[in-house]
Image (cartoon, rainbow, N blue to C red; front, side, top):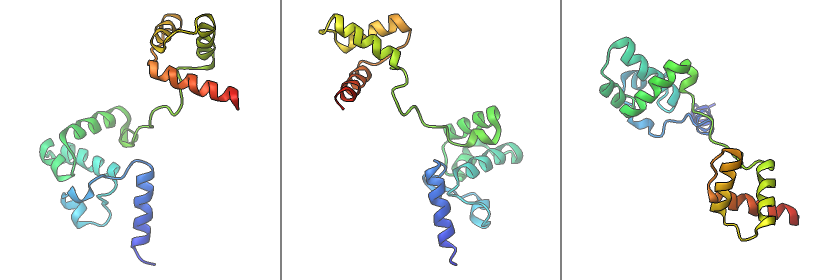
Length: 156
């Protein structure tokens, strides 16, 4: 079996989990160049070794960031995440919400009631009323989208 298949499978897994270094070719640190164990495509490993290099070896942040193909702000973000959560902090954070979490059924019922009373209400006014009633901030565009989804569900 060739070594490229497992490497490709690993790269695909890293990509799917958001752990693929966007520019592995920029990692020039000797560990990643000389030893097969260290994979420049593995962003979590690269960040950990960059932090270790600064903390344990006393390397300057600027030099370490450059050698590991990352920026100084990335170093400081990784350092804060590691200090806060350990190795788990170096894993990518879960992406944002995938649905309209603010515009719950209760809020949409309120919107529909308001529109029943006054059909000329604009989304910006509805956003203001939602904020006043529920103490949540919703962008008018989100209200228009949710309203369109709500109307579509009713016709199906």
